[in-house]
Amino acid sequence: MNVKMNRNDPCFCGSGKKFKKCCISEGRIIVADKGWQKLRETEGKLVDGILLPYVASVAEDLLAFAWEDFWLEHENFPQGWYDGVAQQLISAWMLFDWKPDALESLGDIEIEEGFPIALQFLQKKGHLLTNYEKEFIRKICQTYYSFYVVLNVVPNESITLKDILLKNIVTVKELQGSNILQPGDVVFNRVLTMESQSICVGMFPMRFPSQLHADLLEIREKLIAQEGELTPEKLTGELADPIRLLFFNMCEELLNPILPEVSNSDGDPLIFCTLQFSLGCSVEEASQALLPMTLSKDINEFLVGAKQDKKTGQIKCIELPWIKRGKNTIWGDIKIESNKLTIKVNSLNRANKAEKEIAKRLGEKAQFIKMKQSTLKQEMKRQEKKSKKPLDAEIPEAEVKKIIEKQLKEHYINWLDEALPILKGLTPREAAKSNLELDRERLDALLLDFERKNLNPNHPQVNVAWLKKELDLI
Image 1: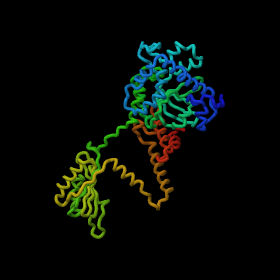
Image 2: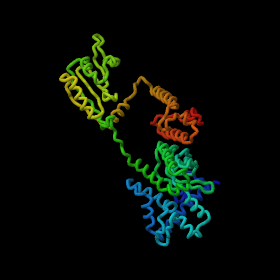
Image 3: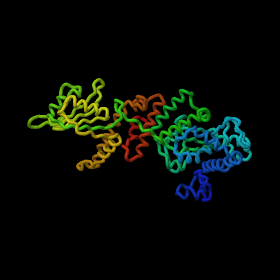
Image 4: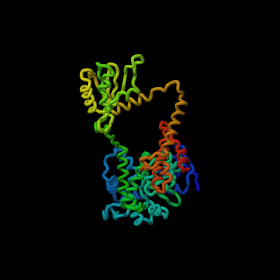
């Protein structure tokens, strides 16, 4: 049943404000589901109008105790993040989730082991509540926090979520979140269902990138191996703190990313070095002298791409790989030209060895001039500038787009039958036909990640509908 909102009614989004001072001012819908509105109004009344004032009147220090327990000793978030999360979430968590230590007394509240504050209020002051409010407290104290992936969004109306840990699918009526979230996003949340109405209660204001969906599937399997089949009772009981701790760890990694130490195959820090030498001999003499550095005995192997004088046949420019003996690892690139020798390597250690090798094999015929160095970040910026150079004017933009689309299609035709690490060595076709639900879930997570990235117009667009058709998923 739908009901038309009056200007002075409490706003149906659950903000606690009057409709005229909330969603109506933003031009949002003015027709709300009556059952949903009742559920949201009850939430606001119980939290802000009854339970928090009651706690403040009898035990002012209770929120401080809850604050300490809530964060599980995490102290590495920005201060503003603490404040924002605390304002939205800790009060509700304290009332409906927190199970304080046994027999601690604050004011006239006796803190009982294993019972949230709201249930203790219900036991002592339940006569002050309506039957619907009593049922709300019972139901919400049975809800649990979990990781949900967004499957579908109807703006200003609803979000379809899948509980990654328990595999349940639910559609919640949600105004604000449905204008922010996109399919593929992962959120930490709990869902309350009453009288066929489902809402999000205490959704954390942090959405995770879609690629974390696959990571959470593996975490779920590890939890099942350790704890047995996951249930709502376990997520509200012994796994409540570990799950919240996992969430905080994921937030910390997202907010404070640790840049990986980039090194080459020798373990040396990645520094791009270009050594330049003047050359006092012919290209042929220099290439023969440096040929052992390629681990080859025949210079003809490298003449295919060499530049030669059309009249004399003499080599004018030749490029050779510098290969490490034993592991066949390419250490660097050697370019020999008339009067000039250049070597490119990716570490200072290799640069020093290259200089010694040149001195050993060419002696005074090669004189060191200088070495240029650049970091990975500088090299990436250089490549980025290079990639932004205008395309050949002879190739129309539409033609370039067709070429890219053709290349992408060819790539994904092959992709369907490639063994992928994220699918644990299965091909997408094999995962789609697998009898194991987990294999299909991994594939679903991958396709959702493609859909999420397609929302970025600058990202190469993947035809997910075509992939699903090829995989017999639609």
